[in-house]
Length: 235
Length: 184
Image 1: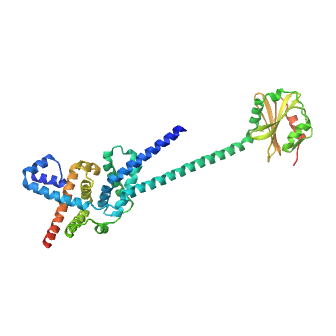
Image 2 (image 1 turned 120 degrees about the vertical axis):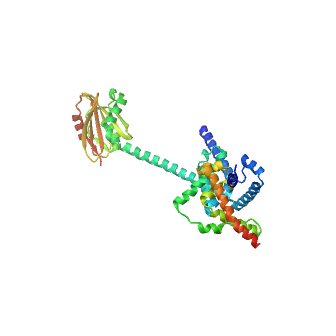
């Protein structure tokens, strides 16, 4: 190792433990003195750099972190709460909309109801009087002036969350089901529907929806007219 | 239900463990980091800010620090990035401050004191490309290889810069020391 290289290496790291450098130092007193001089300079540099650290810096660093962690934690819970609230809100809104959508599906619900309660059609032994029918209908504010046929089934039913009256008439053509579902309708409309086994007619009246269901092929409209004529509403 | 409770307890244990590791990290390295930051930025306020930001970032990614041996280099890398970010945001001018805020509260006699502050000024006047490797070597105690990897330079370049840094300090110091001796 030449002298220049030795000096370069000592300058780069006065406290080097490089064997080549240490060997060279042993054999060269001048270089040894130079090394000592550099070490003393490095010692000075180290002292000069060794400025005092602010008191409690470590404690402040730990505290700073705790506060920060606490804040982010709080932010997180706030986000969670907001999320939960949003979900609950959406749930509420969609639930309301689903319920409001109910009247649109009166026909489907009427059919399902009849399929669910086949006994209402087969049990023909009862014969409810006009008074009995009107007593129940009165809770909706309605009144029949006369009954077109024998009423073999009469009960309150839950019609998609709406209390309604479920009647079965015995006609010449077989049993016919009538649902009276109280509802405030702005428009009066009539519509017909059917499936494999039943024909149906809905009439949206002023105070209620009437849904008439008969077996396939039954003439519904005469009964529909009769019922509408005999049904009166107290204002 | 029970499983969840157990899980929560595990999370708490993990958090306490993380807190312990963090505090250990702070206690072991905050002084060196502060000194490094001080001499890098030349201002005690900035230095403290840098150290705080560094440890906050370190806390956030403490889980990724698997090797305790690498902690020091890891912290330095964060601090250097934080320092660079400072210049991206705003160009501070601390050239005046540098001279004034160099402090030394250790009790020394006048001459030693003068000599030291003289040396401190010289160090601060070094170009950053020379000052930084010197700080990494003297303050942080990194080897030439480690400095090379931290600064993304090859080792020869690092050694050359260290050589020049000391050389400049020595040359600059000589006349003033001489004068000091003569005057004394």
